[in-house]
Image (cartoon, rainbow, N blue to C red; front, side, top):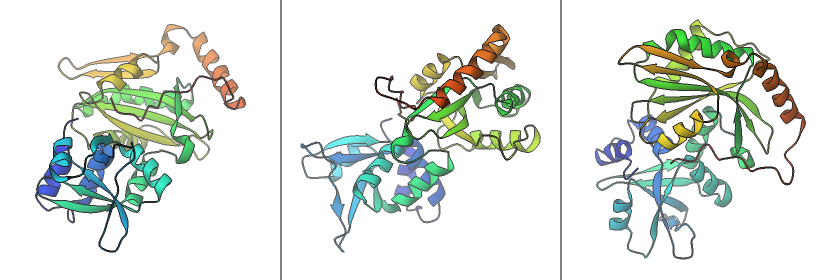
Length: 283
């Protein structure tokens, strides 16, 4: 992504104070460019009160125009911003566009990530696997019935997510939409399913939804398609719904998946195990 256009529009109009929720979502969904010195370290700045802050720019071009020091632009997504906040304790992100600026507490970025189901520290590495949990199956079947009500939704992948280092587990919906992020469509879709289709009991896994832009996140979408997760696809041109599941191809696969999931929970990650792909990284 060359420019965070949603963020640029808000800053250029001076609307940060009245549209802060959209501004926050734009940072979390699209990230910002930060200056990196020749040493490879992030170039922080200081306020008039000598409080350090992280400068963030809507594009590499904006950074190059406003920063006089010899630095290189580096695109930071929300998880990288979180890493920087944890490692350095920097309290704020100061956002810059061509005609505006606004300060954003780092804590708000982390809060949004928590609300979307992300865990802190080393728990940012997660492994996605096919789930046969009754809630996962119910979500898959409900998506088949209701996905047409959300015309911009192209595909939804239902998976079991396990953070390798912390052991935290939950069910995950990756939702690909033909919309620029931030988009509230994935959240509205899940809220509708939970309100009208799927019952989640107290002992069931927690649920998280992650939106994907079909253009920006094409590489991640291709990776998800190769993982053999339960997938519901919608072609709005024809109205056709396609449901993919190993359960339909081989009923024995369901029992094998349950056994594999139990074995993975019982075995803590040890030396020599394959390092999982960081699914939160943007293409």
